[in-house]
Amino acid sequence: MKNKKNIENMENSIEESKKIDLRKEIFSWVMVFVIAWCVAFLLSRFIVINAKIPTESMDDTIEVGDKVFGFRLSYLFSNPKRGDIIMFDAPNKEDTIYIKRLIGLPGDTIKIKDNVLYINGEEYKEDYVDSWYNSIGEYEYTLGDDEYFMMGDNRDHSTDSRAWGPISKDAMIAKAIFKYKIIPFKLKNLY
Image (tube, rainbow, N blue to C red; front, side, top):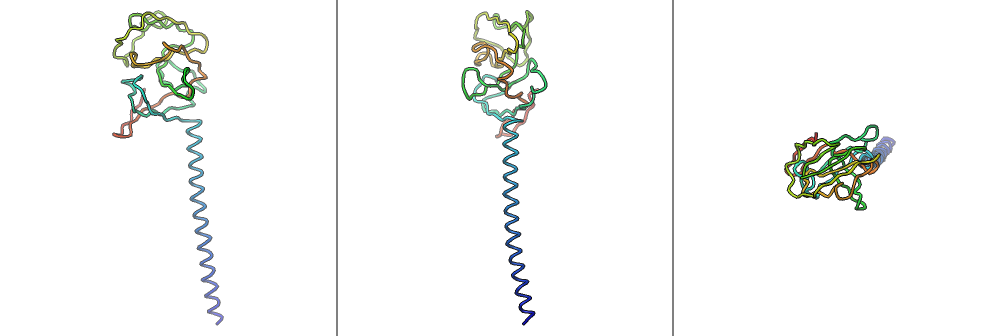
């Protein structure tokens, strides 16, 4: 009889242990998902940004439907460089992010004449721009301190600093690092 009681106690103990193990297992999986969500949230909020391109303003470099991955910390300890492709707060639309190429730096004089871009009096060669067809006439602007001149690579179909003026460094969200397409999957470095 005593053996039977011991066996029942052992069986109850094993059942109780299984219940505790199942609870621990469920709790550990919940914790994994919570931690993964927190890490993803922190990464997307403070370190990286991912955006889908809705317009042709950066064709052929970045096309409609491409997804772009940007690094938010790029300009924390360094200054933007001419030619960088930057994601920034749109100066004319709340809660909108634009992506354009940095053309002019603080102190530069930007001049556009007969669809040719001049920076500080010298023609600026751009191998990423095919050609411009629509003339905006003559345009000249000298950038002040903390003013950056942004332009889309598809000059005929881009609303950029020619329309809304320069942006400040504070408006910059991230430097675009690479673009990709989901279907068919392609990954391309932007530099």
